[in-house]
Length: 253
Image (cartoon, rainbow, N blue to C red):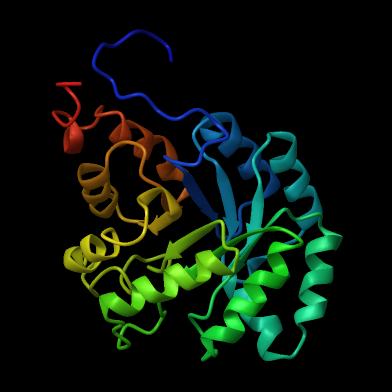
């Protein structure tokens, strides 16, 4: 840091299991990636190339190389996995992971109907090849999953080999964990936390109010994802109690 402040919470050092920040790249240019790393590389733990943007973005390998040189792992969005699966190309998907030397992969079923046992098979298979993040929740805002089912799905996917489970919210933060207004389904989150360890969950929380809510509930080292590149530094100040939203949160540490 540039100077000393007392009563600032301790962040887990990288590589970390808690306090994870996942940023979403929705089509950054190489120059934008370089600028992003210069400003926020210290605070981001992993980058997701949103949904299937990796299929269309130019200079994909060069972009991956820039992130790799900065020590920031990257993975393809879960929708790309689903796009391969629905076309019966799972083996092709695995070859794509190898082609680009990916060390992480996301398994999701937010856009297609998938038998959960089959999803767990995909997780187990991919876990032999890469570190798996599995996403729970639907991208359909009309599909409401009860809390006991969220817990059951998360536990089974962790047992199948997922490193962390992701709570679905989409890039807008208006489905899954959240109401269409962006309001947190607080009862759902609190019930999930009675059964699933918080360090095993990556909460998609693209909106500032959502990030603040999770930090107030679970502290500075909560795992948060779907953060816009321009919001990584602002999020870090929220984590440290250096923005009005959490200004008094950590003063008694």
